[in-house]
Length: 109
Image (cartoon, rainbow, N blue to C red; front, side):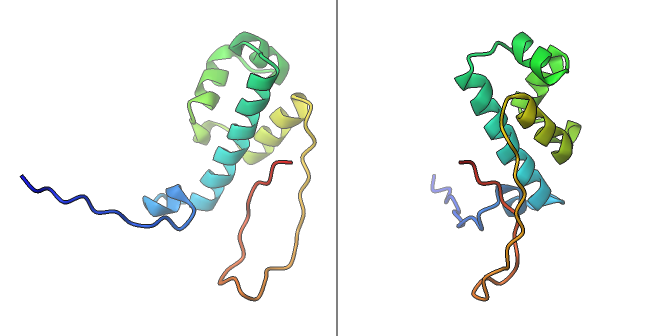
């Protein structure tokens, strides 16, 4: 049995790699949710405590941490980060001429 596994290099966005629409938005949401998850972990919050802090019910926290991205707007994720004590800063910078196209990314400090 010689089933060959095909491997492709990623372009840096798994959502684009698998052909999902709005892949850039999905990547941003995933990165923001990752930061929210990290803050919840660092603060050692239970899902119930995190839900209270964010003003949502525990089931929504579970959805958030399981990656149900469609239920949350980027703006709402920004508000969650603020509620967890993090500032959100948006910067617009010129695209380097060497890049084929401009991109949006989340950078955690």
